Length: 260
Length: 154
Image 1 (cartoon, chains in turn brown, red):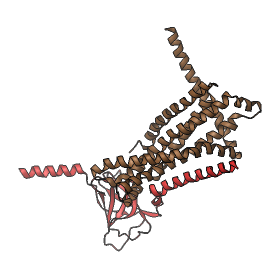
Image 2: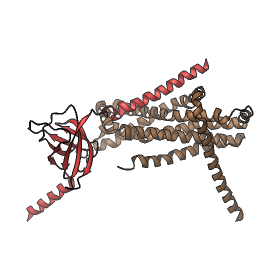
Image 3: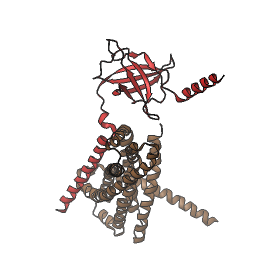
Image 4: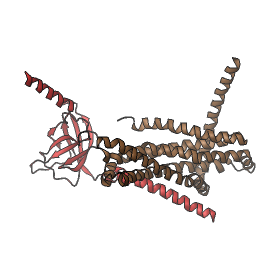
């Protein structure tokens, strides 16, 4: 009995400790960001491994998600004789929700896990301590560039995902199902608002990029320096990122689209 | 050399992302027709605006000539004061123009339709449209129909 209570208390304290460490870690990371603009080549290296290598995955997934939306949306809308609204359905669902959320989930799986594994491995092979020995701050040299790269990549990837998805929806709607392309685009343009829909989607993707990269970097930095520990940290990155993305998505949606 | 390739691909990635955003702005959203030209403001007082919203279109003969800019409650008359922003190029709308609230399609959005009058004077900034017709509220219409039907049966 006492043991149960003790372990419960320990678990609680551990959770708070990790939460605290995570936020202090974030603070240190953010402190390292401003001076990166003087050494931007570090960020470019990371933009390549975080952003560019995710592009193909994002593009292909976006295309298929858009095509599925087109097919499913058509089947529902045709019952109401409103199949011309397919463009609106595809664009709004992609720009508001699916674009930011699905690309963030893919980003966490593709880039986030790689970041965690990389940094966890750096830690377990004591590269980070080695840097400290040479008076190089790993927070500034290793963590901050990756953080900034994730923050920049995510909105771009989400925009690519949405654009590709809309193109996929158009392919299915126009070429396969024969919806008039003029109606498809014009209805979409009338109903999709630049500020309310597109910009809010971009804001969402920036938030997701921030949270995903933060989680990935912290899990790597905080991993137990063994091969098992790095593996566990990688798993945690994907799981926690997914929770954070979906939970935050609800909060952001309630804030952005809650009223009317 | 490897470094250079990295830079090129990163540049292409960023450019592609920006192009995608640009496509979302121009092709998908209504940003292209957001930059409304400077217009003039006219107020119309309606008994009931139904589901009219700010930014709803204002049309004349089906052509969009402006947007709804603001909707306020008039505290004296308890009617709705709808401020219309009419585009500057349509500055020859007669003062006795009538404004009505219509619905696009059976379940569509509501918009304001103007019917041009015959006056020689044109609407200016700050003018008021006197001839207005409130939105059609479906429940009221059905209620009236049922009422007249019941009366007819007597």
